Amino acid sequence: MLPSILSLLGLLLFALEANAIAIQPISRQTCQSTGTHCPPGTLVVSTTSKHASHKTIQSAINSLPDDESPQTILILEGTYTEQVNITRSGPVTLLGQTTSPKDASRNRVRINWAAGNRDNTGGIDNVFFSVMVVAPTLEASLTGTGPTGYPVPADTPFGNKDFRVYNVDFDNTWAEYSDGPAHALSLSRANGGFYHCGFYSYQDTVYIGKLGNAYFYESILAGQTDFLYGFGTAWIQSSALQLRGCGGGITAWKGTNTTIPNKYGAYIVDSSVRAANASIAADIKGACALGRPWNSQHRSIFARSYEDGSVDPRGYIDWVVDGVSRFEEGVTLMAEYRVHGPGVNETARVEGGVTSVLGQEEWEMYSTPQKVFGDTEWIDWEVVKEN
Image (cartoon, rainbow, N blue to C red; front, side, top):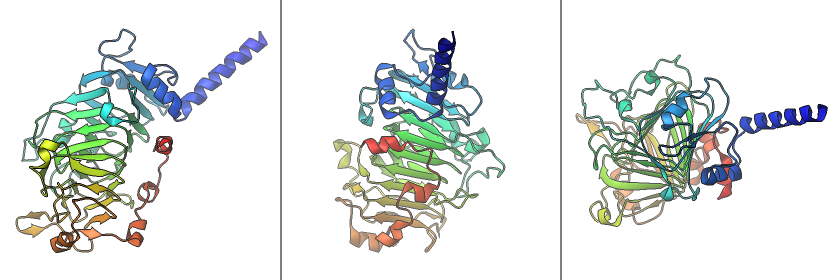
């Protein structure tokens, strides 16, 4: 009797330990490809499989306990037409079913939603049109209007401390051109890691709100107008920025987080900036700006990245509203560091007057996610080490 009890206790302790740490790469990939060796308690979502516990992703999320325990949801192959909302503060991991876990272009799970904001009065907030929102409260996720955005109260709680997604595409199918803000992702007051994921829209594809921290690894981010924007911090590593057209700039950062002194901004590192396809490349040759300042505190850096001929020879551009420039010398940082490719024109960069070319010493203070975010325990470094 005693050995049996001890064995049972051992199994329980093993299960608790397995659920208290990050999923190991091998077991995660096995879970994604075969549905086996998943963390204990993993929920399965499918619109067709009789073995699934939920038919929608949101219903699976709503069923999670309101505590700090790590929870995993496996999403089986298919297209899910729904909006997803994450308010839980405990760790949540979404796994997309795939046999190619290191290739975002072959993802088999897609979340679609068709919604865009045509309201120019500020009466309707952009967040209501997002495919996925990660934020502790609705108020925390509001984008607001103008260069300062919505004044989120300082006592608003922080949301999810460790949200992770693997091999899932988020596609806002509102229009096949810029037709108002149409988020694929909205993340505020939360830590989010996205690995081999895809984000598709045309205008304002990815919004990182106040106190939002987002890490993208080997992912695809596609858009046309200001498709990376926000107040928070985004590190985009070894990813593909796909230009589906040109309008405004790629980045339109507002800055800042307002309440913590981290190095907020958008960092595009060891990545590529290219026309989305060959047919559009000729139409946008030399027309896509790297960014424009939504306010004077804009900060974004393209580092060690490839830029194709779609990039505006000036690099970044100013944003002038009612005759007033939003670029402020010594405050606005729109920069490049060791970029390469046909989109690089050093003479035009200088003549444009707003693009900074950083040297090694200037880049050093921003050169790692640790230096930018501070705390990086929520990033899955095992995925990075695999490559």
